[in-house]
Structures are given as C-alpha cells and as structure tokens.
Length: 494
Image (cartoon, rainbow, N blue to C red; front, side, top):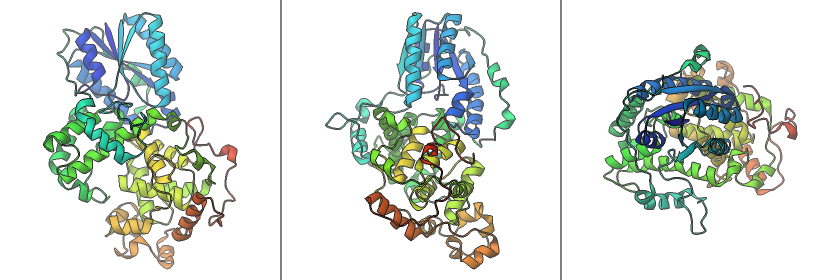
C-alpha cells in the first residue's frame, strides 16, 4: 500500500504526489500535525484555524475517492520523522509519496524521512508542487539562480512551456478505503482558541474565487490593485499559503484567459501573472541560498548596519500608533483581520525599516505571527525588498514617503477611515497629515518621526557616512538580544 504525506498541499486537484500514489495502487493519506512547529515557525492563530478547517475538508474530499486520511500528532521535526517511520511500519506501507518543501528545516526533514524509510525498505517518491517551474531550472549564464527579477521573469516566460510541470488530474476512485479515516488528533485542539480566519473553506471555494477573479476583476487589476479601499485583488493568498490552490493552477487559468500568452496580452492579466512569477522567484532564491531560512540578510554587509531594537517604537508600530494614518490603518487591518493589502505591506515595512530603522527581522516575524496567508518565502522576500537587504531589493535611497503614498493610493481617505475611525470626521485633505491641534483634539498620536530627516539618516547609514541619530535609542536592547526574532525566541509584545 502507498501513503501520501500531506504538508502545505492540502488539495486533491493538481497534487503530483497524490496523483502518482493513486496511479501506483491503494493509497492512504497522512498528515503530521505539530503545534511545536507552529510555534517554532510563528504560524499565526488564524492560519492554524485555516489549516484545521482544511484538513477536515480534505478528509471529506479524499473520502469521495476512497482515500482515507490519518492525522498524527507530532512535536519536533525529529519526532515527525520517527512518527512517519512507525506509521509506515504499522500500516504495511511500501512507498511514501510527498511534495517537497523548500524551507531549510523542512528540506532537512524530507531528507531525514527518506533516509529513515530507506532503512526499513520503504521507497520514497518526492515531487515539486509549489512552483510551476521547479527551483534550480531557471539559471543565468553562470549556472546560478538569477538575482534580478526582470531577468528571472524573462527566462521563466521563455522556458515555461518546456519546463513547467503539467497540471495533474485525480485518478479514478479506489475500490474501497484501505483503512478508516482518523481525524481524532484534531479533537485535542481547542478550536475556540483560534480566531475565525474569514476564509471560505474548501478546494471548490478556492476554485470559485479564482474563477470570479479572472471573470470580474483581472481586467483592471493593473489599474486598481494598489488601492486598498478597493476590492480589486484576487484574495487567493491564504489558499496558496497552505496549498489548497497551486500557483500552477493560477497560471493556467491566466494563460487560458490570455489566449495562451504569459508575457504579453491583456495588461491586467500580464500584471497578475508577474505577481505569480514573483512567488516562484522567492522560492527559487530560498533553495539557492539557504541562509535566507537562517534569519540572515541576503546582502551580508547590511547586517553591519546599526539596526535599532527599540521595543517601545516597535510596539507603537505593531499597534498602529505611529501617527502616520496610512501606516496605522494598515497595521490595524492586519491585527483585526489577519490580512493586509500588498501595497500597504510595502508601506509599513519601509516605514519600520527606513523611518524607524528597526531591524527588518522584527517586522518579518510579526507579520508571520499575524497573517492568515503567512508564507515564509514571500514574506521574507518582501521584507528584504523593503529593507534593501535582499535580492533585487528597492535601492536604499528609494524610501516611501508614507504621507505621499497615502495621498496617492487612498486619496479620499476611505481606507484610513475604516481602520482609524478617530480620524473619520476629517476631510480628504486633512486625513493624510492631521495638524498637531487636530491630533490632540481627536486623541490621535503625534508622528513618531520627521520623515525627511529619518530618510536622510537612513541614506547616510547605508552609505556608511556619519549620521546624527534622530530617534532616542535609550530603550534599545543589547546586541545579544537583537536576535529576538530568531525562530527560537520570543518577539517583544506578542
């Protein structure tokens, strides 16, 4: 009998490991649920709820194909590997199929499992499912991973039809279930402690949302996607993050509607395709440069910068009390809903790293602890882009002015009013930069920094010049504490 080890691929359609296992014979599914791993990797409470909901949905979907799903409670990665070994022995499994993950810890776990099962004569079959084109196949002339997105994208589009993996179907249902579905491991979880993720459950719901986006929104995606008050984005990221939907499926839907083209055609579709390719780009980089999974900047020299570790300033940013309305509205959206508009993710990340000069790792970890669509590769890539520490990052001298960003992308203050209600009575002109008198009257905080001075300080530090400190650092933690965002330590104020 075969087993499929589900991880962040909680779907039946376009699942290479499931497809091949069922073709090879009777199949059972297994999922290792580790609350230790959730804590270790800062999986947000909303995403935990989403995973639990979709495990139940997956079990029902698999049952229609007579494939049982068994959930194992595990703790550390070592325990997961040993639990899988015991499982295959007890169930008489001869082959284990799974889709690989690319983060360093998960990659090492895949290797450990393969080695342990080899010792008991169980074959392992490993597949790529997260990327349309597997990492390592898009290389520059030196045989290395591209470090510039535009060059990566150009080669990706050129090679897509020859290198992209095919979308896999679901084989015919098995005659009967080999064993009984067992979800009892979920019973030990107190579902009440997880907030509602606000995401409709199930593959069919994900497919319908993709179809609706292609039908109704993608035509003007390129024009509206940067405006947070508009419902103009796909909102598929939560499904993608836990593998209810694959990037390959999204690309195929786009190609079908774009008359078979990737790099040209309808501007809205081309813009969205580019965003999907960014997703693959960050995964290719994660595989090529394991240090990205080790709390390290891609540009090593940027770790020598005098990043601040000021807990008071960081707390104000986390709570949406910076005195910059668009930043505060965005952070409150994150804290209340577990999601944040992509334009806003760039604005708040650049504010934390360029205006406050607080270590990007603190912001990266906080996002993961709150996002329902938390995805390590994309989150890390986005933060290092904003902090100018990563591959193809924003040049250090390109620093968003949060007030101008607010005026440009929320011109009427519609989004700000939704999440910063104390400013709702202000005019569309006042709301982006209230006067001190108005702030005091409404109980809204003063701006934490003078943006122009902060930007000049940041540029000077990146250039290696002497700079006058514009923000009090008396509450800074010591250098030894500065790694408080590492995966083994607590982040302040969580």
